[in-house]
Image (cartoon, rainbow, N blue to C red; front, side, top):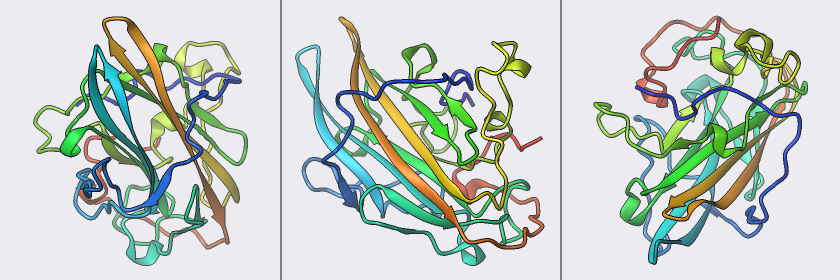
Length: 254
């Protein structure tokens, strides 16, 4: 199972796309025809409370209708609820470790998710994506560049779980490492350095490109905020199967 990103790298600065979404919708994922889009990144993951945008990409003379969305949800739910939002681009979550006892050790109480679909919820053709996340402490992960973009394709043998729809937690070890340990320029990026009770705002950005006979074309950049507020005593999470959060096959934090 390959990762959606080729490498975990970050830049000290970047410019937002001129096509960054200012007029997006919010609510249940819906395509350009008004039809609901399912979210198939594992059971228990909802297609509601997404910020999303529909648009048509001219792919070598053929219009390809794309829907892009970002959202945040409780990690497994239950004791980790609630996650609330402002109905536009900001989600509010609780600080502290996973309280369910069934999650990945090292996880907080929330995760972020994305969805990129074509007509009828299909996996889009010739679409590439990359992610960038900045944490409250100034930590960062990811780079919004085609140098580190990965094609939106299905994971072989994964029973319908696609890289174009996924849920992650910032506790993954690949989001914690720094550039020096990756044989890159020391200090270029320092990982998210996530702490259960670190209050403040995470910013999650996703950028898409189309790639046809003329090469890469930047299509869209979407950004959301996840505000960590309140404080709880970190609990002890147990080791359990992760399929219910769309996390099968991911590495644990060191």
